Image (cartoon, helix red, strand yellow):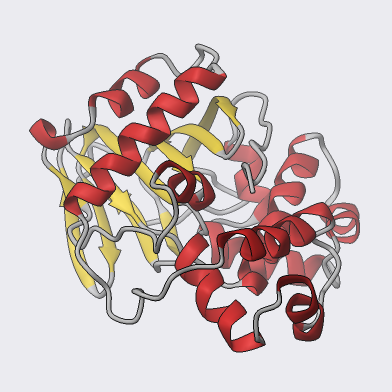
Length: 282
């Protein structure tokens, strides 16, 4: 199967209006797919056409039309059409900080089975994806996140090592510092001084609260900036410099590792105006 490339794109990506910390997208594949990658948000979607085939947590999974899927932050996965009929799905990417707020704190919920039966899909998800071009109001975003958080908590399975209370306020300060200028690499000592936590507590609790490490969170915010710059027509070299990457090669390597697609192929696949939804509330 041919994967996405800058020379022969085989997909269209269409982004709908989002909200703070919420991004909505429709992906249509004509023969290729996303290579193994990971991102720092919950990815919760519905298959509309074809069979979705993906590797996730060491196992092969298939999503049929009408079924949903839940991919957790920082979990390696891919995604390709399971048949020659191609694949179309719609998906919402949700900042883990919003899930954390909706649940009132505590470690993020984890659902072991990534495939959701049609009957178990949260109605709010279906509603939010029905008309991708319809603006998503602030209230609608709150309602969507609340419904998804409740669904995740209901279906979650415990993960070992995630029972300690979280210093949510201290972690939010670290998160805000990174978001303010993701091109800056802060030291562990800076995080300790800002939060009052040890560097070990920062590393452990940040992942429990937001689903990824502070380092990966910073890279994702750089990539958010890079995607917006790419869609505005920036060259790869200029985008890499403005987003704070060492060079074009560094940008391309991290972009593909995160999204399963090269920056050039992503730019070619985006079918309409793209705007990042931000990192959400802290």
